[in-house]
Length: 480
Image (cartoon, rainbow, N blue to C red):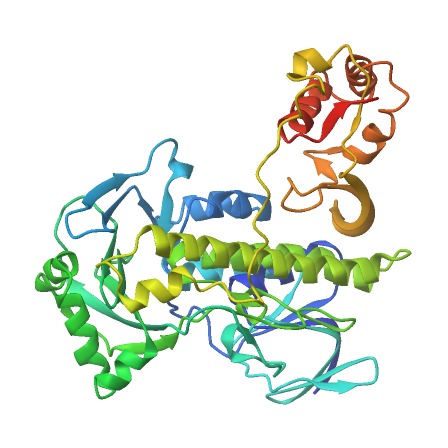
């Protein structure tokens, strides 16, 4: 069996399934190869509310809502100090709640979405490391070879393509197991606790029972004589919250260990391959948003791969630059956020576990600290109302810079507004492209005149919203 495919996606977790669905929607010939038979269990059952917009954009939101997964309406959190324990309710609509999902069923929903879009799906099929062949790849699978012009690595931490990774956090180990029984009926769906040697997370599982995970320094397992279960039980017992949980349940699985260290792949994309999900970068589990981050990487990758496979002008080069910058920015933002959370919630004074992670952002992942938002300088017009009758300009230290941008389903080079007050260059506010609007500022008799010009090409009121956004960030000033 020798098959020729346009794109081969190896790995059918959330990242691989979403990438396959999006590329199939865009008309590409896609095959998904997954070594495990589906449905298959998987750790990582917790989804934050940020997953809902992605699921709706993929067209599976209603199916996930109807699947009967448990809404995370309340979390029992024992954090910062030993006396700081509280029940935190989710507020707002149903979609303001996170979810605790059966990953076997959840992942199957996403994979079926890819199949329905036209992707060929082969589960229970192991793939060996792809070998370069001409302008594509040969991928050895059971029964023969798949030939693909483009390959996507969605195998998580397995490193299908074999490149080294750049670690971006302190090394962290996760020990986890499933417990059966009836957890205390305190109304919580998840539990989080901080102890001196690490932190603990637990959640009710669909169908009963709960999964409890402890996150520790790997060296702690060595010091414990590599006795996983002994270390695991000791740390659970050190937490009044988890000790109470486990007293009402019995362990029902082997204690497993997995790496939970953050990293980035140095080369996330090239002319013939892309890495998505944890094959591209892994974030600290403290954020509880690994699944949606994987899906988001796949959505960005799909636009980049589409622009490479169906190039238009400089779109292929722009696509590679866009995805590499997406990876850098996303990994850096998550690293900075995690470091802040560790610092904010540091338990038991100056325990090494917490102190090291509070300062864990490495040179490779350190996000530039955004400059504070600077209002318009005194004498430059002051409030927005005072600027309206005056001629204005962009501040001299702001510029319109050519930048790869996501436009519809493609990556294109567009001019974007760059300034120290902005975390990244901004090409669009909503659906409004900024550069053509800002080009007209010098010819406008006043800011009010510029807003009237903008409103002739934008929905009513949108021009004033853009002016407010620019002013709030100190990006416009009175023209001399």
